Length: 263
Image (cartoon, rainbow, N blue to C red; front, top):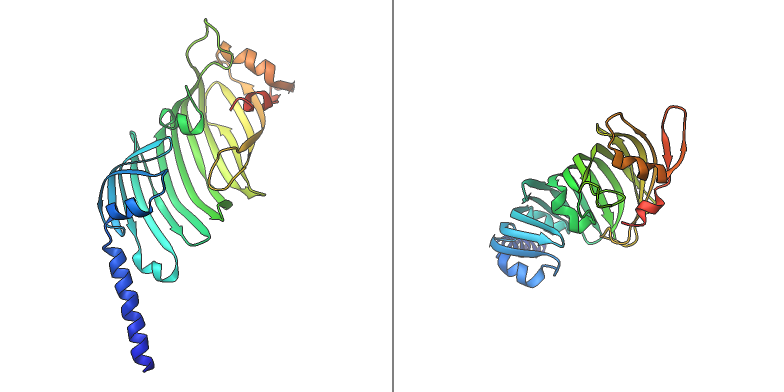
């Protein structure tokens, strides 16, 4: 009788896995997809499928594809590999979801900053961003581990002090942001320039306000900046306004609170 019960349980589990594997993705979208996720042109199954067009608020995607390891459902864990196009860039990686934890790994993305402007409050900012996220762990929506890097190239920003004579944008150079970890629900990072009008060495703390979102997050930056010979004049006055002290080698210590309050 015990063997019969074991075989029955195994058969039921196999049936559930088989049913989930063949469940149409379009039906799952109508029943289960959150309102923030928009999908069009859905095909395939919950296990292996895709969508011609997808979006979350402020981030349109095309040619979304996913692959789920259905057998992991038996242990209450859903690992998914995905890839999509972000404008002329891309997004790909892996995410594993359990009842309380979300784990992201091997996430790579490249996008034009203009595409992300509405989401990240970067209106008027131009440039290219590439992300390599080695690991992100969320427990109950809060990050507990984070390592990776973000590179921003050919950055151009609106004038910090707009005027009729100011250009529509000024060059700001390229930067490397290293994500170093999480402490007390704050994301920690360092920032270094990779060429441009300014030399920059900074430490960044992003204090999170609510789980699963950057909304309400408060950034704090401790920065030292020094102009290179080709720095445009449009940077001089704003830097003077934000400078607390300047050492003999020309390094400025900045107070960025007035600028951060505008974000």
